[in-house]
Length: 112
Image 1 (cartoon, rainbow, N blue to C red):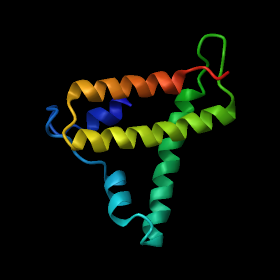
Image 2 (cartoon, rainbow, N blue to C red):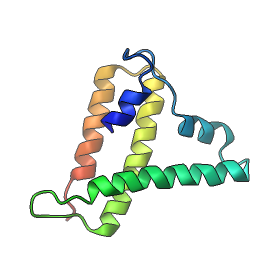
Image 3 (spheres, rainbow, N blue to C red):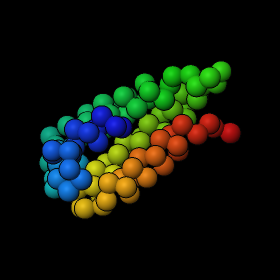
């Protein structure tokens, strides 16, 4: 997540966030073009698989179930897109950090 956020900062200043091409395309073209939908699906799947790989690593002596990992990974995809949208809209660096921390805590929370 930190890598994604670092890339999205145009020049390191909080006020200069670049948009996410993936997110911007989804907002602008969404379901109106079948080729775009196909490429967006690939983007979601790619990002989700990266989060899945990270969440599949054992934490101490426990590991999340595969079903839980897939759910949490998709939640992370949605959350990072939301954070990028809010960052671009002018939310403060402090708030972005709080959102990122909440996202990490939620993603790593052990299943019951």
